[in-house]
Image (cartoon, rainbow, N blue to C red; front, side, top):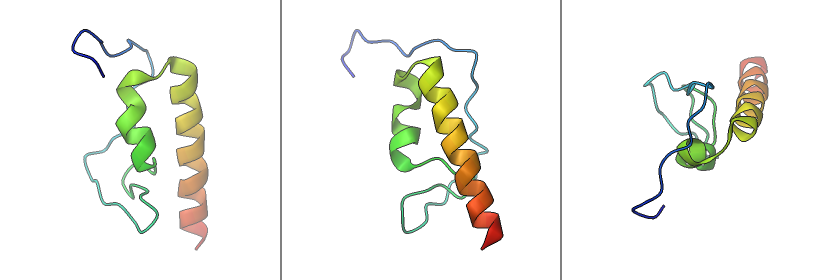
Length: 66
């Protein structure tokens, strides 16, 4: 991100629950976002954030079924 770049405003809140713990695949076991999704959260548009949330929800469901 350049010095002049600003985070994209959005109505989609971060799902972060401040309980970060990455598994072996770099998935946070608190919010189930990938490390890359977490890093990019403030830079992507609302549509991409929605996709991140769908991905996280799927990961959470998979995790709970294990």
